[in-house]
Length: 106
Image (cartoon, rainbow, N blue to C red):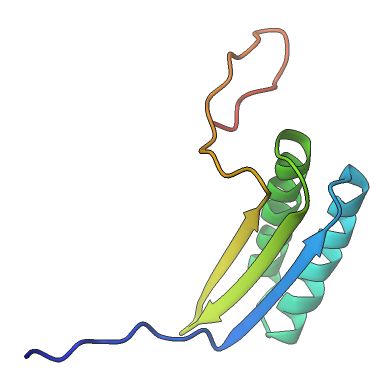
């Protein structure tokens, strides 16, 4: 039997659940800022992560359904950010209108 390498457990984890209201996007951004500061993530990366969190949480609230979960995990110097909502199906591309910027994400 060959040795099996076990997955590395996260050194740090954080999770919060947000009410499905666009006003909660700023709460997600503040949570991200606090967690990244606590974990000593450098400012340039922390700024980028906060922007990504804002976009992902806003999209989940606008196009998803139900409560939105925001998770961070740091393992061996790698930072993972996850945003989920209650929809179990995979996202589908919507028809894009040439008159707006809507639908450019997918």
